[in-house]
Length: 312
Image 1: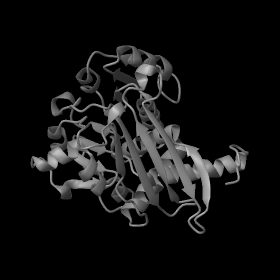
Image 2 (image 1 turned 30 degrees about the vertical axis):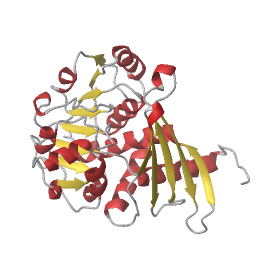
Image 3 (image 1 turned 180 degrees about the vertical axis):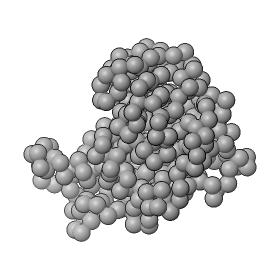
């Protein structure tokens, strides 16, 4: 996770510095199954920094014992255009998404932040917590999920593992989880806000990573309007984040008040201004993250003799 966080620093720095090319993702609906497919491509300045990810999201899968999300990442050699690697993308997506919030927390959360709230209990929630615990001295964790049994499994699996403290407790509402937290991570597929301005304390940092379409909203737009807001990419958030779109439309925040995380990395803007300020990182996920994380995974696989080589 620490290496993945460093990869995200490189990814967002390149993106905001104009050293990466990133078209908006394309989406394909599968109406019969209520499924969604996403195609994300990018180019950046890392080894094998040309490629794409194909992601599917099928809401009916969990009930059948299958993962909600499947993904595959294809990397190319940008000097020759030759395919270099095919990577299982579901684990990579969870890792790099958690790492992005780890970087945001490192740059924006108060130095003395020790209490974490996690809203959601799926795969993404696990890497969110792992990443936050990499960058702050976390002492206690509260978790809430509409799936109570899922939250209990989350608490049991995460307590004392992956750098997470032993104090992980399940609570009965998102507000109960968040109201005393220094850091809040939302990782749900909700179309209605699960976190509002009255649910958090002053000085909190929020990582919001669950929503990725205009129809989805994890965060109340009023909370967006009352925070110093950072996004992975301004263009992507204005096109794909339901809560950002609503907050701008309703005049709660202006486009010029949306800062990119890479602008902090590159020294172009300040992060947190004071300890009482609410900071918020809203991520929709961008393909340059997959390239930077995937390139590092491929480099390590080559060194350790992992994976399988095939002729195309």
